Length: 435
Image 1 (cartoon, helix red, strand yellow):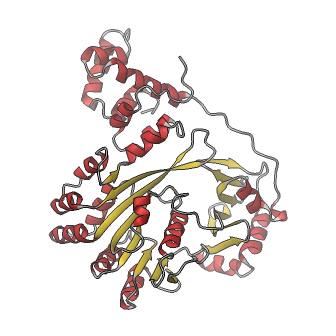
Image 2 (cartoon, rainbow, N blue to C red):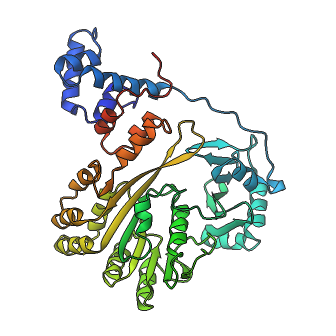
Image 3 (cartoon, rainbow, N blue to C red):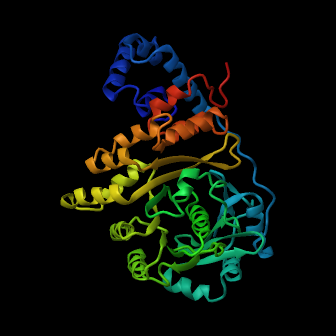
């Protein structure tokens, strides 16, 4: 269903059920389509006038077409300046592929960086210059090659060369050269406080492609501040500069220094480390070892792919067979200290990405919920105004929308409880909607 139709928005918002919507459409058809769906919704008592007005505003905002800027003047691959041009333009990714223009991702949008398509020799020359002459042999053997990217004074990141149906492509992930602070990354202060002078398990959560490596670099910089501490880092991306601070930090690349995250965790525990930063706990064995390491008195900080704190814990529990779930629920209730979720949402003008966060701070109330397995109650605890359990993602989105930093439709799209968000944004007018 077209997402600009009122029926689609009604179902998405869970304002009415599919059966109730079908009944309204039948009534509309029986009356010869002389009345709108909105009028019928009012007559049937499914919505009030205020709710209908907000839904219609949202519908109108989705129909507004944002102008597309024309591509800039062409930059040639031979000059070797594409990465610099992309960074200066604020791009987070650069894609060079045979037979297509060079593309960059700025904020949430892709746009062409050149007006001309790229030829095969130009791509190969770029690959040789940025990744070395031996990369061609590696590419022939492995079909893709990943190298760290560092341009002093400009950026850090990773660059990947790969083969695909149309030839060869290069994808460069671009990040600031100096790790951002947790405040700059939008991480709540309560989550940052869990990274020093504590034990247990702290989880950072988000979607891939939303600044995981940049966030973990900031987390490591915070963990490294504590003097007399031994911190081990396990990650498949180690392109960030070594952190400054009083801690002893050992970094190991997964796939090079250790075979995988699980084997890296086993080694880290044997070394009697004080803290372990893990780039991914998305594999069952690695997650279980992280919990056991936290039970042993260490601080374990890890990343998991999920969209919410509740979703993160549900995914973790699904790693285990049903007979073992009660044990891991009890273990998590004991060692878990916090879950911090971070999403990047386009700013109102679309020129940058802003962090929206969810934070679950574990106290006795949260522990009781985790032990019982009623994880749906976690959202209620986080959403309690003035509570001690953090805040929900929907509250962060609403705050950004009320401050007019993000568009209402972007807040609505990301929201967990869409009807709740619509109600809290009452009176705000979506971008592009006029009287």
